[in-house]
Length: 357
Image (cartoon, rainbow, N blue to C red; front, side, top):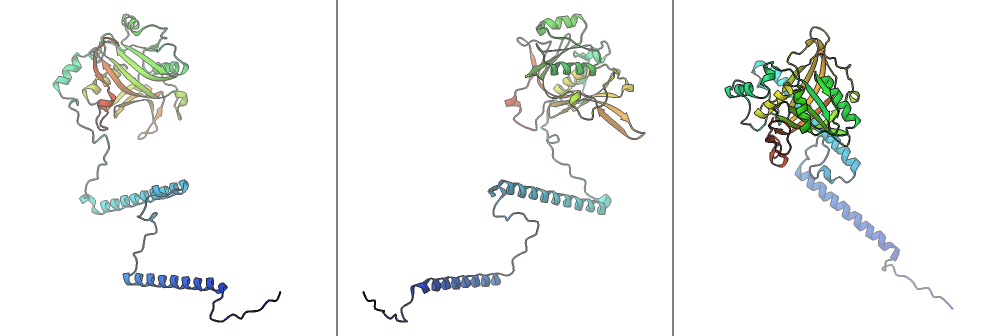
């Protein structure tokens, strides 16, 4: 079979040259578009320079970054930048105050939950005659008039574990004239008459849950009142860092902080009546009950004189935190007892700035 060659005219384009012509057209369009954008920018003028410290453009937030490591890195950089700006502002204000001297404006007081506290009508005025009369006639008046000396019985719930027993023993070393007795399955209503007959002024019961101390019943004898506390953050002496030597048998000083309302005043007097009124200053030991936002922090320290001007403190332990659950008139009676105050969480904790102690 013979093949005949057919001549190709110059006007007909070859199929291989078609893609090349299309790519040339696209390049020309891109160049034209870039030229138009450049002309528009020249007409609008120069763009404002962005500071080098900016981390993110204002169009999106950190939460839009999908990569977790990248998001964390950007967050830390942003936090560091904010801290640096805050420090620069503080230095600037300090320089302005030094330049103005006596004419400098007073320092701004930072807003905290404590100084924004909701006013309580029951706040105690030390010069109030009614408060003075109540203090002279309440259940603790015999102690403050030095007619009785404190004597404390410390016991536990049934079948206590080792941690609770050690906690009771360390409490007994903090409170002078305190004695630890095992419960042996006796009901509190049977224990209280025995305590009264043996001249005990306090009954302290340490409750536990899952081998951890979680509650305290403090009953003033013989006529009450009885307070129930939730106990948390218990740390024994072996669990504390930089702990001092074992406490001595000296009577410690007692510090009560921020018990300002009538309820707080009663709780503060209850804690004060646990310790003798004649502290032995040679022991240099201090028991502190510090109330902050209705949490009572207990600390036991020894202060050390380094020289004539400097004084250091050594924590002896144990340490724990309490929160008042109820205050009951008279001795412990869970069935027929009359309660002065009961903590109702959903009703009373509606505002973070309202405190009861």
